[in-house]
Image 1 (cartoon, helix red, strand yellow):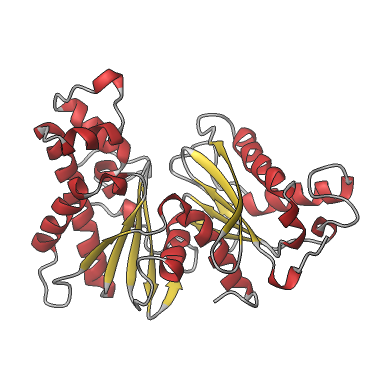
Image 2: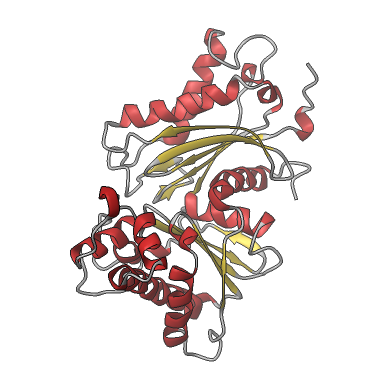
Length: 337
């Protein structure tokens, strides 16, 4: 089999509170293979790791694995990128979990046993593959700056609004993950000093008001009746599109929290554009219209007025593309621009 390793793909894993996705990503940002597992977030640490290794094993069974150059992991945070450890707020079983070394050990065992997917004398697992950890917010940001809505901008905030709320920064034309890999984690900026407790330990965080579960909880609390028992944020969005006042109010409150966090971030670092992706962003104008209106009220200083807000372009693939892009950049892989 022809395996041009010098231009081969990156094996990418995107770890979130509800799903663990995997893909082989080529140097143009295309996904040539993909797989998916649910995140057993309420189970023990070994169960969550097993879902990750199953994703890797499925990718390793693909013919394209023979040319894989490294493994890029984007994980819900906080992360400790230098140590390769993760403590995702929405995966309580993982606290200071040594994810990078656990993945390396799994790949090493497959290589040494010669029995797992991707093992054997002609497999790249005969040598150690580099493993690079990135927070999911910076990963999404890397993707949108490389291939999506932030392309061409020198200063950007890119956000994931889904089960949680994360983000990442591009400053002066380059991804800025910060020393630990968590820069831009806008979901845990407090915007309500007396607000509800957040799983991170603070109060009134953006995530407690603007995540998908938060939107659904607020709508239910205020009397919204879910059709057919579907109490998801997507169902609230559908009701909002149909003019339901309670659903609209829930999205307006979420948009206000997002606007407050965005304005604070823009005031600190000066931004050209804000890109919003994730499942909640698929709600469209029931989120973006009140978000832009609220941002006009919060972003009042001259250098943050008229800040452009755009929907993400890469949808659910952003985490996978971005984890690969961040790994390629960290390792200075040839052929990745």
